[in-house]
Image 1 (cartoon, rainbow, N blue to C red):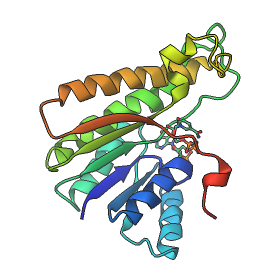
Image 2 (image 1 turned 60 degrees about the vertical axis):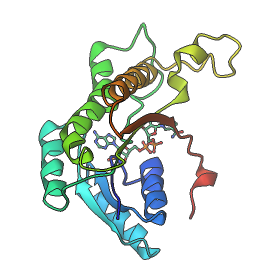
Image 3 (image 1 turned 135 degrees about the vertical axis):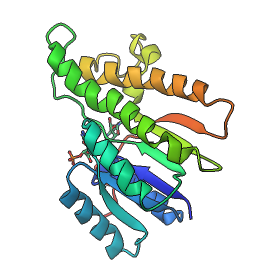
Amino acid sequence: MKKALITGANKDIGFETARALLQHGYYVYLGSRNLENGKAAVEKLKAVGLDQVEAIMLDVTDEQSVQNARETIGSKTDMLDVLVNNAGINGGFPQSSLEAGIEQYKKVFDTNLYGVIRVTQFFIDLLKKSTEPRIVNVSSSGSSLTLHSDPTWKYYSHKAALYQSSKAALNMYTIDLAYQLKDTSFKVNAVCNILLPSMVPS
Ligand SMILES: NC(=O)c1ccc[n+]([C@@H]2O[C@H](COP(=O)([O-])OP(=O)(O)OC[C@H]3O[C@@H](n4cnc5c(N)ncnc54)[C@H](OP(=O)(O)O)[C@@H]3O)[C@@H](O)[C@H]2O)c1
């Protein structure tokens, strides 16, 4: 059975990713910075018969927490097939490149970029044991440099300095990571998931 770790999986896109992977026969380590919220999410999945899942406490901004999660998962399995770096924050709105302070930038980057780097580096050894390792970084089309430079794009005016710069940096990290792993069986991708309330099964 293939095994996956998803960060920020106690709700919304991360939770639905867990559901989808479980439906495809994966064992899922459901990351949540609040363990009780993670356990509640696991119970929801078990209630619909998806029981190959367990909650793992993991705060991507806290190196000790990531290390603890690595040790916990390492005590249960010697390999990981999929890492979904889903945990993210938007930093609150409005956010302007002239008004947002460095501390606000640091906070958003600590989750959306450094969090991904932390988790990836702590788990890369387990992923290297898989025959088909996959790393999926959850990004956003709203961080596309090309789209946001095009005045004819329908969301051109939807600027969000903190969030979009952090996800644009994540895109570059993803490209670099894929390059570092190009001669291996890894596949490394960034994805954009738009989650609308109507998409969430009740
Ligand atoms: N929603 C969209 O339309 C959309 C579009 C494009 C991309 N995305 C990206 O998709 C991902 C998920 O989005 P979403 O809409 O599901 O967001 P969400 O509803 O705000 O959920 C975010 C998840 O990340 C977790 N999280 C935040 N900070 C964390 C940390 N330091 N350590 C661990 N977990 C942390 C949250 O935990 P708590 O429950 O404890 O807060 C929650 O589980 C994000 O990376 C987002 O940028 C979303």
